[in-house]
Length: 70
Length: 244
Length: 222
Image 1 (cartoon, rainbow over the protein chains, first blue to last red):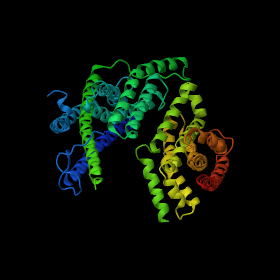
Image 2 (image 1 turned 90 degrees about the vertical axis):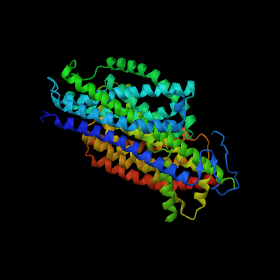
Image 3 (image 1 turned 30 degrees about the vertical axis):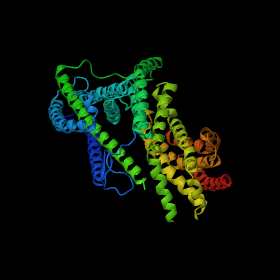
Image 4 (image 1 turned 120 degrees about the vertical axis):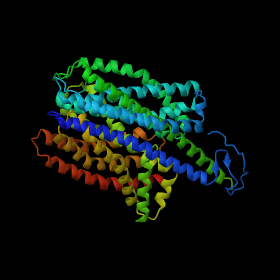
């Protein structure tokens, strides 16, 4: 395919577009993995949304301890 | 499902998990068709094959403005209705908007070099787009600097809305500034009204890019929701540990 | 040596994180460079002529604005006291902090300069010259700025005062930085002449800045 005398610019433009899109996709995917890992890690340690479960060894009462909103 | 139901993070994540694969496939298909059409498009009588850069540049420009519009709508959602999903939507949109603005500037620059002889010229449109890019970066900096997501959301919402009102003013004043000082040399802008054979690829690429944006946006929103949950859990953990 | 390495790593990590100075400096640099054509008009020939000066001024302001927080933050949370009482030579500590600061705020400016040169219609020679002079000049700015930061460390509203104190000291760096850049573009001097003077001045700034900052910190914390 003949891209004419300015082929370099056309190719560079498409290459840059592909790179930027790839970076965006990479960011979204890697961020997802990192968050999933953190969540799995925290859940494994017994933290649930409603507060510390009985697994956590502290004097904290287990069960439905609610947290005041930040 | 009402909009307020989506405020429940688990419901949203479930929805996102269902929708994302389909959005992704649609995006890939659209790009497949679009790129094929773009590469087979005829050469412009004035610009030759360089007009193919337009299929990247114009959709990026549309997206750069649409993203700010999305952020503005989300800002209203945050300030007026306090919808928790609005915060998330706004934060997820900012880096995407910035990226597409950058893509617009860069592809425009690469288009301008063979056509106008220079990578950059301070004309009204380019300058307004550059200012928009700076505003996106500012919003991203603000999201980063304020630690509490809820407070950050309100600050960013105000800034976004001020920006939305200001963008037409910026555009107008830059136009005015540009016509006040005539540039030293006159540039001929290549290409006239778009022919149908070029319009079709442009249209398909625009759809493809828009689908890409929404796929990324939905995924980024899901990540943000997960990030907030991690933060809450970590704070809980810190509190629990402090209970010794 | 381990203590210094730890301090270095800590400073770098803090600068890169939320609220750190690292990328904000570049953003500010970009904004300043963008503003200048609004003031001067879009005449590309004029912009190319004053381009090196604009880039230097932008870099100067951007590196100064992040300086006042360098020591003030440590002072506020008490870590400065710990750093000062550590069994490490204060001069070395100061040098390490300055190096970390330059790597995270000064070096990005140097890397950003070529792209901003594009905006100002500078040709590759000019851009290269400016980038090289900035590479040598920004460490000098950091070490000089550190003196101002140390002198005002205990003040609550040190910010602009630091800039006021430090800017006169940076004049030689600015003069020779721009002179070297212009020499590369229009001559008649060879680039090497003002550039070697710039290097000499930068070396002096490194030494004087370190010694003066250490002295100022000792006095301030007594």
